[in-house]
Length: 312
Ligand SMILES: Cc1ncc(C[n+]2csc(CCOP(=O)(O)OP(=O)(O)O)c2C)c(N)n1
Ligand SMILES: [Mg+2]
Image (cartoon, rainbow, N blue to C red; front, top):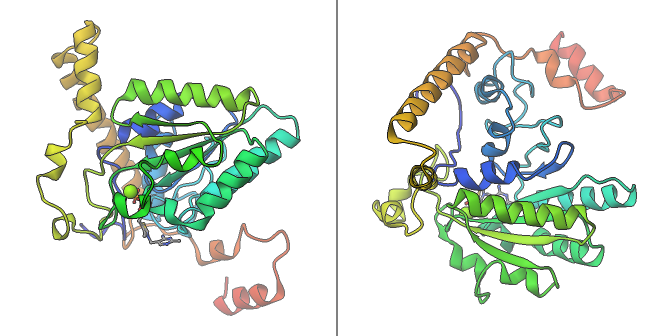
C-alpha cells in the first residue's frame, strides 16, 4: 500500500496447510506450489529476508525482478518456481514424480492446486498419469472456498466434494480439516509414506477458508459478507493449535504473547534489512544485464543484439 511493491498475496487462514505439510517431507522432495503456500518455505527455514527481497524486486532478489512478487523459487528448499498459469504445476509434479520413480530415486513430489483451478483440464490430465503410472506424488487440493470472487461450488460442479474427483481415477482420496495443524500433518505424513513406499498417489482435499483478500488488487467486500470469515466454523488454525497446546499443558497465553512479540521483531528486522537492498521504486535494482542472463546456455543471436542495443 506504500508503493514499495507492485503486488502481494496473503495466505491468512491457510497457515496450517502449507506449514504442517512441509514438516512431513524429506530433504530432496519437491513441491510444485501455487502462490498460496509461502508456508512451505517459512516452515523449512528459508530466509524471510530473501522472500522480501523477491517481493521488492530489489538488487538482492534471487530471481532478479523477473517473477511476479510472491512467486518464489528455491531448488534447495524443494520449492519449484511458481507458475502464474494455474494448474500447470499439477502435471509438472506428476511428471517429476514419474521421473523420480523411473530413476529408482526415493524422492517424492507434492502437487498443489486451489479449488477453482481444479476446473482446468491440467488437473484431470495429471490424475490420469498419476493413477496409470502410480507416480510417487501427493496431490494436494486447497479448498479455501473461493477462487477470487467465485464460490468453490462452481468448480466442484456435481461432485459432492473435490476429494471425490480422485476416486473416479482409482486414487485414494481424503478430505481433511485444513485448519487443524496436527490433522494436516498426520494426513501429509501418511500420503508421503505411501508415495515413498511406491504405493502410488494420494489426493488430499484440505477444507479451509481464505480469510483475506485474493490479492492486494482484490476487495472481497464486493462479493461476500464482511463477517463470513468470523463465522467460518473451522476457526483460525493458529488459535486452535495454541488452545490445543495450552489444554495439553505444554504452552501458555504468556508464552504465546512472548512468541508473537519475538516473531514481530524478527519480521520487522527482516523488512529493514530487505529495504536496505531497495524497494520497487527506490534503492538498488537488478541490472538490465540480468534480464538476459540465466535462461540460455548459449544466448540466441537476437537476444545478443538486444543486449548490445541496451548497452549492457
Ligand atoms: C490458467 C489461468 N487461468 C486464470 C488465471 C487467473 N486467476 C488467478 S488466481 C485465480 C483464482 C484461483 O482460485 P483457486 O484455484 O481457488 O486458488 P486460490 O486463489 O483460492 O488459492 C484466477 C482465475 C490464471 N492465473 N491462470
Ligand atoms: Mg480457492
